[in-house]
Amino acid sequence: MTTETASPETAAAGRAARATFRPNIDITDFGTEVVIHADLPGARRDGIDVTFEDGVLSLVADVPPRDQPGTAIRREYGVGDYRRSFRLGEGFDASLITADYRDGVLTMKVPRLAAVLPRKISVTAG
Amino acid sequence: MHSNPNPASRFSAGTPAGTAPSPRRGRRFAFSSPLEEIRDEMDRLWSEFTSAAPVALGPLVEWGLAPDGGRAVPAAAAGFPAVNVSETAEAIVVEAELPGVIAADLDVSVAGDELVIKGRRSSRQEPAETTSGERPSWLRRERGTGDFERRIELPVAVDPAKVEAKLCDGVLTLSCPKSAECQPHKIEIRS
Image (cartoon, rainbow over all chains, first blue to last red; front, side, top):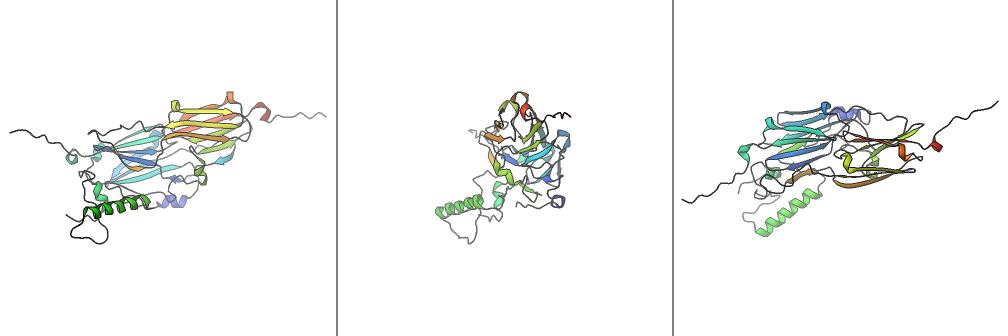
């Protein structure tokens, strides 16, 4: 089941300058693979870590601070690191997970094992 | 029919969606009519859509979420994109988060003290079909797509010709120099 737990460092940081955010994601099932898109605006390619361990796919992105000059007169979002994890079930090939970062969006592709994909068996006349 | 204690398993890898046994809640009958099955399915779908609890994702289940559910800022209702605005003596600096929006799909204009950020966020990076020709199924949808338009009133008029825009890693930064009459200028005091 889906469980959501607060990570201790985020709870402690609160609204501090180095808050950690949960990025918005889309998860799409394409049959042969499941694709996860994550919005990580402000992250740098070399600051993104995607790891897979014990069945858990984790993304952590360090976002460099971007202090705006002058006096803030409107503030609708905070700038901070991103963190989110996904528990993968059976039937995925973790060794073939790919991650690509472009225009502030991280795309992770998680392919299914060929063994679990449905196969069409043609019927031959005997 | 074997019992299916975990509704999530209907998305299990290798089980084609739609043919998996629907999860039963409460009392189970030895024989269930098609009507009951439909009702159960409707109940289940309805509870998935109305429940505040996250929908179980089956093979892809997540954990470890931030306590506030993400980019929780009170002004989130203000519209897309969210903006941070700051003011220096010479300029207004507007920053907006636009992940997945490319420069060609973005239209920024300034007239007097009104800034307009228009554009389109598409999901075109995804194929419309799976390899077997079916429609891909969405397991979770949090990122919006489509057209957006945001009008932002600036505190002073800016010089439209001198606005500089930069889009990098999904962050738009607009540097808008104030128009000449709005800039502070030093007044010489004659003795």
